[in-house]
Length: 383
Length: 145
Image (cartoon, rainbow over all chains, first blue to last red; front, side, top):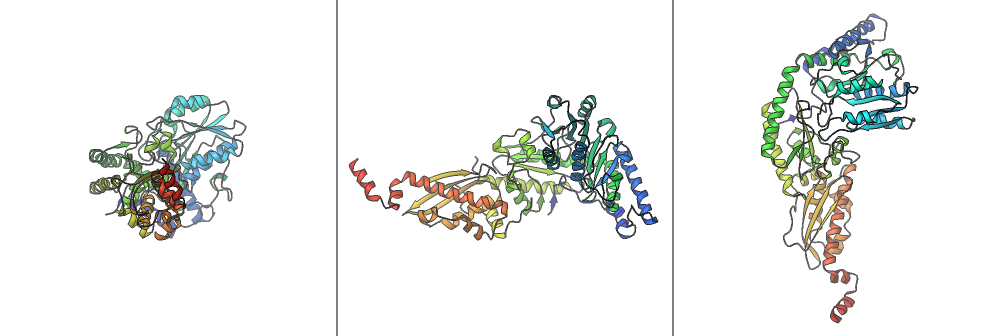
C-alpha cells in the first residue's frame, strides 16, 4: 500500500486542472508577449486568470505577478520592497517561524546594510503580538508573517498584524502558501500589501507561484529581462502554469467546505487513535488554531528520521524537522522557536492529509506507526 | 532531504544486530553528537583481552542505527587493542557507502567504541598498563601495598 501523508510538501495535481493545462502545451503555445494572434490570445487569457484569482483573494487583478514559485515570490517581495524603499528605512520584521526562503532573503539583506528582528511566537506556535509591537522601530519598513505555518500548521493572527502595520504605516506581507483553502484569504480584510501563493500546495502544478503586490508601493524586481509583468518579473509567461494555478485555486475554494471536512475527519480520527495506542507522545503546536490537515507529533525516545525511513519502507510518506533529516544537521527553526525541550527536538514527525486520502489508508498508517515506534523504542537509549 | 541509503544500510536499520544492553557488562559508555542530537550507548563483555560480546542502544536516525549495528558485528572477537584502533572508514565500506551528510554517524559509532574500551581500561588498569609493557611495575606496586 502507498499512502501519501505529506500534502504540505506538495500535492498530486487535480486531473481537472491538468486537463485545462494540456492545450497550452499542445495547441495554444504562443508566447503571451508576441503580438500575433497566438500571443495576444494568451495575453488576454492571462488577464482573465488574474481577474478570477483577484476575485477569490479579494484583491486587485493588476496587483498579481506570476512567478516560478512562492520562494521566488517571497524573495521578490522581501528583497524588492526593502531595496526600493531605502528612503523609508532599513529595518524589517519577520516571525521566528518563517519558511527558509524568507529567512534566507532576510539574511542576504544584512550584507546590504539592512537589519531585521524576529517576532517571537509562544509555545503554541502563535505569533506574540506584544513582541511585534515592541520590536517596531521608526525605521521599520516591512513586516513579513506567514498566514499558516508549514510545519506545525498553526494559524497566525494576520488581521491583527495588518491593523498594527497600518497604524504604524508599515508595509505588510503574508506568505499564504499553506493557507489555501483552509483560510478564506481576504486581502482587504487582512490588511496585507503583499501576499505569496504556490500552486502545487493546492493540487495545481509545481513550478508556479504568485506574488500579490500593492502597486502603490515601490518594489525592485529580482529577475530582469523582457519586461513581462510590467517589468517586475521578466521571463516568458508560463501559460499552462498560469491556467493550472487559476483552475486549482478556483476548485480549492468552490469545494472548500467538503474538502476541509474530509481532511479534518481523517486527521482527528488518526490523532484520537494514535494518542490512545502510543504512549508518551505530544502534539507540537496548538490543536485549535491549526489548519485541518496538519498534525506534528513528538514521539518520546525515538528520532524523527528513523520513524520516517521506517514508514517509507512501508510505502508511507511523511516528513520531519529533525536535525538528522537536514542537510545542515540543524533542528527545524520552527521546532526551536516554539521552545521544545532539546531532548524532544529531534523526535517530531509531520503528517499532512489531502484530497485523495481515505480511512483505509489512515488505518494502515496507524497500524504501521504503532509498530515502528514500538520497534525503535525497544533499543532506545532514552528510557 | 535527499537520502539514498544502500541496501546494506537499510538491512541493518530494519534488522539491527546486537541491540540491547548486556547484563553485568564489563563496561558501559554513552556518546552523543552535540550538533545533530544523536546518541549511542555501548556495553561490552571482555574475555582474555578480547571483546566477547557487545551490544548497543540508540537514539538516532537510520544510519546511526545501521552504523552501530554493523560495527558491533565487525568488532566482536577483536582484541581490545585492535578494536581501539578500529577505523570508521571500514563501517562506510562495509555498508557500501553512506550519504555524505551521514558519514559522521560512523564516526560517532567509533567514538562510542573507544569510550567503552576506555571505560573498561579504567576499571582494569592492570590490563591497560600490561598493554604498554608495564605490567611488572604495576604488580610490584600492588605487592608493596
